[in-house]
Structures are given as structure tokens and as C-alpha cells.
Image (cartoon, rainbow, N blue to C red; front, side):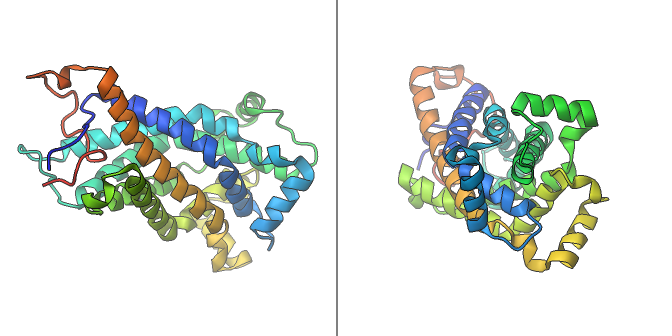
Length: 309
């Protein structure tokens, strides 16, 4: 079957990724908040304790503490993720547009996209978000008055490097997550991805697989970006400390809300990405859509096309 609505134009990939990312985070942030607080807690309280404590101390709006850091970064993060994936996927193709490494091609392109996303956007975004959440949850009088005040305080006290805590585990977490999500999503037969609902279900499944496989990395990343990060010498020491003091299952703290959040995230972004591309192709006519026009990026895109033949 011929490809459908392939976004060969780099600008369309960036715009579509940015819009889908911004809308997704506004829908799923409460789940992200509960997940993060659960991971930062060293006690035995669970998700329900986090929800009760937040409602008691801050009310419903407390679940949106740190949202600004996610919203400000959501558009560039998703834009980098999708455009990097498209570029990497396009370069790993033969002259007749076949994937060089078969089904593994999407996984490798996802690893590249995740690494780029982690370096340029996710690490500072996650560090700021986690510090804001940690500050509110552990203190009756939070030091940070908001996103910009928090950033100014962090940079003033720790320097710019203070926004890049946990870089290595963040790269590992995001690269493996995106590699798994893109890889699993594109391995699913195209017959299941013909409608928005089908695309959403496939995206949710791909997101769920990534959570089950790499939840421990996310817990370590959160601990190394919290206000108590100075106690850890490195990522390995963080893992050892968690296991020794809290048990192995502590590496799976917050898996419930994270599973719900990631499944919704991937379902929404994968679906919206394809739908936004359709709209852009209708109203934003680019060179690649004209007869004889050359695509701006080779191999765009496996996300909105039928399965490669």
C-alpha cells in the first residue's frame, strides 16, 4: 500500500511534533506529578498517600505544581524527538527506501531521537520540574515561588550545571524509552494503525512496554535530580543506595501512575502527530508535494505511512 501523508518537510515534523507534545502534557501532567512524588519519597507510602497529602496541603491545583516547566519545554522536546527520529530513520535506508536493518531500524532511530531529546531539552526540563515538585512536597513553605524564580534560584546557587543533574541516567532513560516506543509502534502490523483509534491503541501498547522494561532507570533519574541529589556520587551509587535501604522493588516506585501517564502520552502524541501532518499537508503546500519536488528529509515518515514493504 502506498504511503499516506508522509511529512517529507522538516518544518512539518517540527510543528506537528510540537503541537502534539504541548497538548499531551496538559492532559497528563497530574499523573506525572503523582509519579514523580512517589519516586522521590523514601518512605513506604504509596500513590494514594501522595494523592491524599497533595489534596490536603494544596488542593486540586497542587497536582499541577511544576506544569510550567513541562509546558515551556513540551513543544521543543516533541519537535526534537520527532524530527530527530525522522532524520535518523531517513538516513538508515537503502536507495530504494528500504530500512537498512529491517525492524531494528526504527528502534535505532528512536535511540538517536531519545539521546538528542535528553541532551537538548529533557534533562534541564526534568531537573527543574523535579526540584519544583520536591520543594513543594517536602516543605510547608516552598522556597521556589514559581518556574522562573525556581530557575533563577537554581542557577544562582548551583550554576547552569544545576539544571543538568542526572544527565547520564536521563539520556539512558529517554533513549531506551523512545527506542522501544518507536520500535514497537512500527513493528505492529499496519492494519492495526489505519484509524486514529487504532493508532492510539498501538501507541499506548508501545508506551506500556517501555515502562515495564525501564522503570528502574526513571526512578534513579528522579532521585538524582531531586533536592537530595548531592548524597549520590553517581548513578550506580544511587541504585545501590535505593536497593540497600528500600529494597529492590523501590526501583518500581510510581510505576502505576507512570504506566497510565506514558500510555496516554504515547497514544496522544502518535495519534495527534499523524492528524496534524494531514492538516499541514492540506494547507501548507511545500516543494515536496509538487510534481518533481524533492523531499527535504529522505525517508519521512514511518509514523504516518503504511508498513514498509
